[in-house]
Image (cartoon, rainbow, N blue to C red; front, side, top):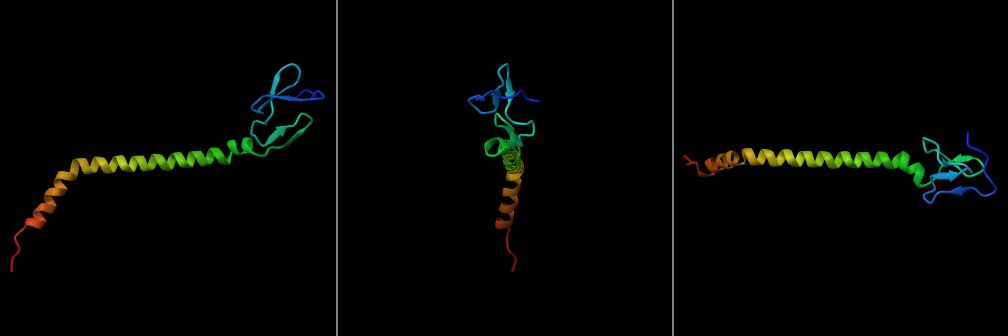
Length: 101
């Protein structure tokens, strides 16, 4: 449990720590759902709550989508590089093939 706060609680510049008179203590619970106000714990709002849940999940999803797009592009480039001449030859044979009446 945090030590009782003095008359004026001092928070770090980033707002994630508070000074209890002897040491810096976290101003947010480990799950980032609660914030210490200097007097009591209150539900966290704003960037800290977002950073722990929805923001990190969104970042993970965006990262996965970008990774999949890059992987698909690399596979397409590899296939075109290796099979491109053969595909080109097949189309040339089809276009240049003699037609019978």
